[in-house]
Amino acid sequence: MLLSILIISSIIEELLFRKLLFDFFKEKLKSRKKSIIFVSFLFFIAHKFYLKILFLTIVLAFVRYKKNSIFLCIFIHLTYNIILYILFS
Image 1 (tube, rainbow, N blue to C red):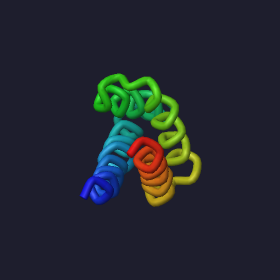
Image 2: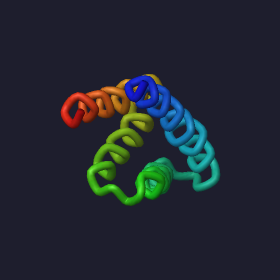
Image 3: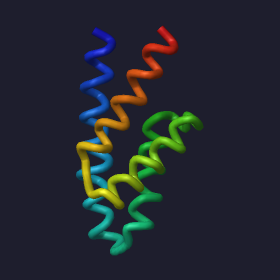
């Protein structure tokens, strides 16, 4: 059950943050760099300022920008969540 929640939340978060919000702010701010920073900060806030998530969110935003692949972001996020689940359960 918990594993399926991790999978679903990873997919939803990436679609929301790296797809919808990133694309929205890239157009609004007219800057990919500002979009990376802004969306990463929003993701960081959504995870209650959990410091370990800061690096991950910057990596994910950079991957989204460089590779233009939401699927790669989902894979990275999902892998991160599953590794944490295995290590701490």
